Image 1 (cartoon, rainbow, N blue to C red):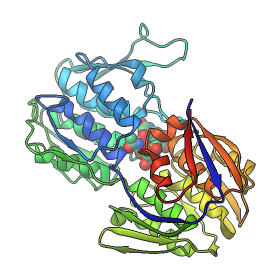
Image 2: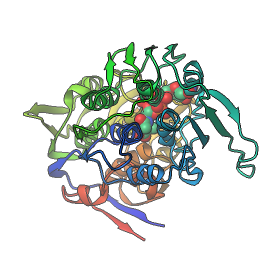
Image 3: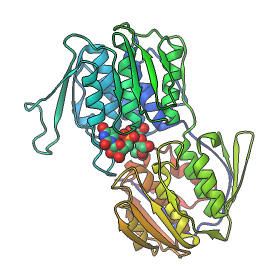
Image 4: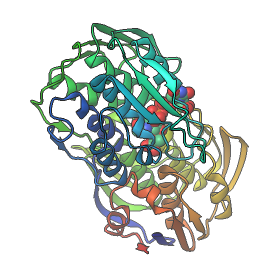
Length: 416
Ligand code: EPU
C-alpha cells in the first residue's frame, strides 16, 4: 500500500502550480454521456483530471449493461449514484447498490429516490442481490410506462441529487420543475454542456431549474465538454499557500467561485491578490483566529473545512469550526490532536481550535480525500517526518499531488 512521506517544517514553498480540472464537475458530465446516442465515448471531454474517481467512473460507464450497474465499482464511489438517473432514463430500468464513498457521514439517497418516483419510476429493494455480508441494500427502479416530467421540491438541496434528477428530466416526457435545488457551479457546468448538445435546461445555478423533456429522444453530440478548474483544489492550495508559501502563484484560479473562502482568508490576515486568473499568495507569520461555518454554495464549501482547520491551528486565538453539512467530517480532528493541535471537539459538528500551536510529525491514515490533503498541509508544517497511509483516498481527487507539491519545494515523496 502506497504511503506519503512528508517532512516538515517545510522550507517556504515557492513557484507556480496549476489547478487541475474539477472532479465534481467531471463526474456528472461523464455520467451524462448515457443521455447521448453514442454513449459513453461518443462525447469528447476536455480537461478531465487524471484521478482515481475519474478512472472509476469510466469503468462504471463501460460496465453498464442494459441498466445493470457494476456493484463492485458502485460500492467504491459515492458518485456512482450519478449514473443511475441517466441509466434509468436510457434503459427504462436500473439496478444498483447503495453507493459507497468516503466516511464523512450517513449520506442517504432519499431525495434521489423520491425524485425518480415523482417522475413515474417504481422503486423496489432487490433482496436477491443484496450484499448480505456487508448489509448493503440494492435498489431497482423501473419506469414501466416511461418517465414523465414532475414538479419536485428537494427536502434539502443536494448537489448530486440536483444533477441526477436534472439529467433524468432531460429524457422524460414533458416538462419538469425542480425546486430548492443546490446552486453549486458544477450544476451549471453540467447544464451548459447538455444545452450545447440539444437539451433545454433553464435556471441551473439557481434554486429553481426547469427542464423541457425530450420524451426519450437521446441527445446528439455537437459540442465537447470543457471541464472547469477544480474550485476545491484551488481553495485548498490557497490555504496551503497562506501558511507555507514565500510566494505561490496558483494558475487557473476560479476566484469568482470561492467568495466565502477568500473573505475568510482575508479576515485571518492571509496576504493574497488575484491577477489575470492567477492567485498569488504569501504566508503571513501572524494570522488571526476566525469562526467559520460550512454552507451550501455560495457559502464556505464543506470540502474546504479540513484544510481550513489546519490553518486555524496556526492562527492566534480560538477559532470555531462549524461543519453543517456532514456529521462525520470532523473525525480527522483526533489525528490533528495527536500532532499537537489544541482542539476541543464540542460535538460531531463543532470544534474549537486554539492557536497558535506547533505540530509534530505523526503516522496518519487519510480517512477521506479532503482530510487527506489537510494532513499533507499539517505534515508540511510539523516538526519531523509524517507518514500518510491510505493514499488512494487522496489520489481519488488530487492529480499527482506529491509531484506537484514537490515542484514548489515541498519535502514529500511516495513509497510503496
Ligand atoms: N442528503 C440527504 N439525502 C439525500 C442526499 C443528501 O439527507 O438523498 C444530505 C447529505 O447527507 C448531506 C446533505 O444532504 O448532509 C448535502 O449532501 P449532498 O447530497 O449535496 O452531497 P453530495 O451530492 O453527495 C457533493 C460532492 C461532495 C460535497 C457535497 C457538498 C460530488 C461528487 N460530491 O456530494 O464532495 O462535499 O456535494 O457540497 O459532487 C468530495 O469531493 O470530497 C465530496 C465529498
